Length: 80
Image 1 (cartoon, rainbow, N blue to C red):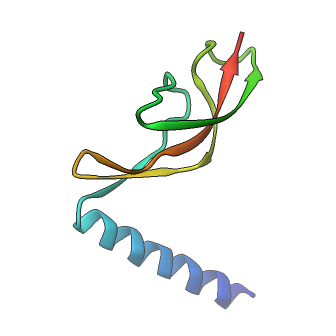
Image 2 (spheres, rainbow, N blue to C red):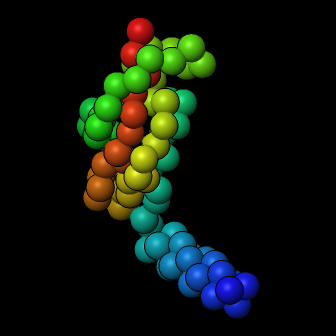
């Protein structure tokens, strides 16, 4: 099981390096203000830890290429 985990981590590291080399960046907006141009809200949930209208949880990270959105981040937004 450990060798499988090490192989998966190595593959993920290589993929991340390749994506970075070609200008693909992750969109990981946890704690930031919700922006409908970059984020896709899948749910709204009350929270005491972050301000209303902020991203509470990132369900799936998004990606951008040279400043253009490839896939929006799927997020849960904090409600009042």
